[in-house]
Length: 293
Image (cartoon, rainbow, N blue to C red; front, side, top):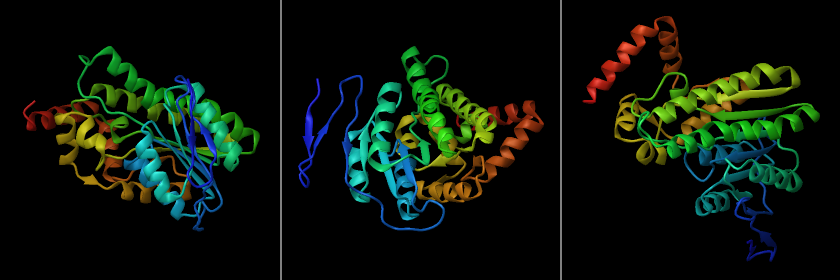
């Protein structure tokens, strides 16, 4: 069943989709400031109800985007953040390909062709191979398949109009690993691999791809979503604020750089891992022992 939500200011009927297409929009607004390369661009950000996604949406508005649409599964968070930015918003389960495509269609009808699509939604899951099949599946669907669906929808459109930009949020765990959370580490490696493949395959088509790989960020996922061991290990390496991640993203977008590393030291860690994998694994075991595991 569906129902109609009415906007108190303009009286518009906003239809909420059927259960299998769970989305809702709030319309009639644009970001106003103008600056830099995002000036005049149409942007969509998933997982924008808070954390990194919320910070990205705010920064894109500050940079002068024509429209920044916030997409999130949590209706209250999406609406609250969007209202603060005077931006459009949708509620959507990004693991539902049909629902995501419907939202993208609505954004492009209302705001114009999407120039930058940010697949930022992600989930953290504590545990190893003993995590439930349901936890493994849901982590896979959100952290990897949602990015596949976004690329599948957006890339043909971007190619047809001469180019576009995809920003996929992975994690430093996708370049290294994350103690205590196998589903998260495995799927974030998948996100990095997908992003690399897209950049190689579609770069000559005018589609630019960047992959965001932060380490510790002060978000609900770090605080509540990945378990004690994973959280403790990440915090020991240093935690930054979502706004600092957004700063790094802007720099990378300006340079059209593939890897976005808000923690620059991650590049060195990745090089050490590649240079001597056995030594790196031994060092990670030592780190795990420091936390009594």
